[in-house]
Length: 491
Image (cartoon, rainbow, N blue to C red; front, top):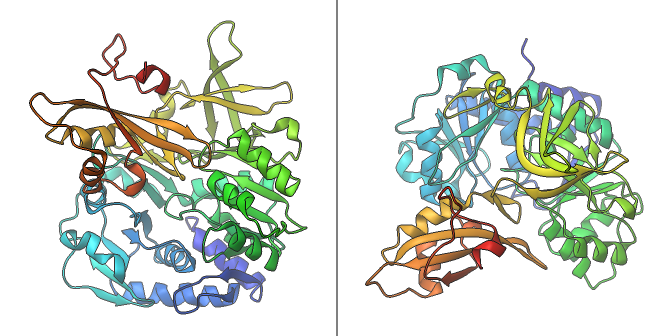
């Protein structure tokens, strides 16, 4: 029998039926109750039956359009229980961005919270099947064909990795690959039945190494009602949190809390993910709470190849040692101590969806290694430091996107001849995007509010640049590529 991650959860629920799984918001009906493993398992079984009655079959690919929370987790596991694969449709994406996913990844049906259905109305049949918890199942009106090779993969999750422009692709993860990456990560984190984890991130983007691990190894999940520092700290203290899993922005909110609420005494890790941790945030957290933050190196194609579990301030700034089961190689130039990070492991992606590219072919491009596009160095103790990004992806609050996507939207404006988008570091908010524009001859330059309104038609809020600047010309490399390094862009 092929591995199914839902079976691992049900096994754990049978072992510890009365152990609390969800603290806090399960759904709108029960916003602040505690849900045990047994209760949650019954919920998943009920949803599984309802979905099968609505037509979900083994081998299907099901889009999930739902906000993060207990219901999101339950629907993922119910989809897996049906023998189907999950493709998230992040709720913050615009209709155009969701349409891009539907045009490039085959979906047999979509499970959507009713308040979010309007965002996909033009792509689904009008006949909606009612599901529990204010949710519906809709058939895709004109599904695109699936790659025939997908049938050879025991697919659990497909993460779409492009937006409304550029080459569309998705990361295909099998149940086996997800299990290998959580098993490897747990050799470092040792998550078990005594752990309670504060969860603050989007489940569309952060699920397969984190939430799956919590349910597989028997931890509880604390879901605060919001991300304000006081709320998070109070929830962590009330429910004896042993792990916090959050972005640098969330830790900034905790630092800014003025109530004096402490961290729980049993906190083992304060894990930082989604984007690089700035030293001023780490220093402020240490001054406020007397402990270091635990940085990680997460890649959707690979999982968590490095985790810093050291409590030493001397290792602040490092993403930690390489996780067991991973191999690291630095592609360095002669005389340099840093280079591009190459990795390989058993839990790496099974394929890119479009165009279909299996794992072996992906690895062959790096002579047996996965090329991350990130630059790093190792210290004498084997701790990895990320020193730069070869890739130009921008991460705003943990939501990642490519500058080309935003540039294409800006260049479709009648007054914009050319655009370049690049990331900038902000003291309190992490990364943001800024844009430099060349005006089209004969056209008046729109103001910033007009440009933001134009972008909002096609892009999710986090992709809209925070600042626009007009210039006479853009800077290019010798080969004709746009320069997106901020210092060189603004020369």
